[in-house]
Amino acid sequence: MGPGRLQRLASSALVLTLCLPLTGLEAQTKVERSGSLYKWKDDKGRWHYSESLPQNQEFDTLELNKHGRVVREVELHRNPGQQKNAKEQIERARQEKQLAVQRQRDDALLRTYTDEREIDDSRERNIALPEQAIAGLQLRLSQSRASLQGLRKQTETYAARGEVVPPGLNEDIAEEKKEIQRIERDIERYEQQIVSIRERYDDDNRRFRELKGTKDEAPQTANP
Image (tube, rainbow, N blue to C red):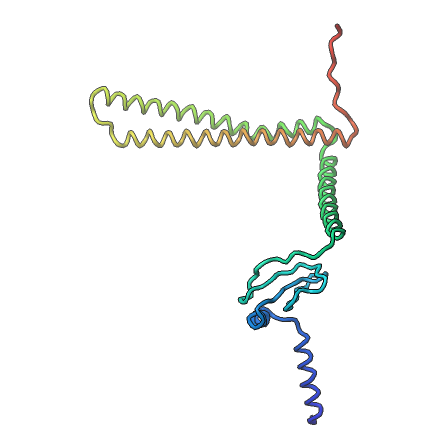
């Protein structure tokens, strides 16, 4: 390979190197030398580094310190018309997403049920499980309260005799109190679950009537 070809290859490699985007280490070296550096994303989502803000900056831009860490996010220089359009686009996208989610729910509702009675039956089936759990917990609660009452009577007996209450008895009383609190918390949790189930199925019932074009019957008034 001749000297001329070698020189042309070296020149091409230098040009290619200068055109490549800055890496994180190169960006840090650059900011340490100049004192300021900006990292910004173009309209295609690609990140770039520069020592100055892009002209008529309309991109997500970050200012970096000498260590290459983000100092602040630079606000986009948009005129009032651009700001309004940006807000409208965000709001329109939010509404479209909300409508899409609602359509999915509506389709699932209509595929699952054929009438309101089926919704009511499904609600009762789902409520039955936490109701059964509450019934079992209430039985345990009654037993724990009776056990606590018995333990307290034993301490009263020791006190009436002027005897020292055994440490184990006090420990049993403390543990029984904790058990009662745990059971009461579990009962409250299941009760809240039942309320949530009822509210969800009530919403489904209302929406089902809307989709089917039916309305609630107006209450009848007695004749004077």
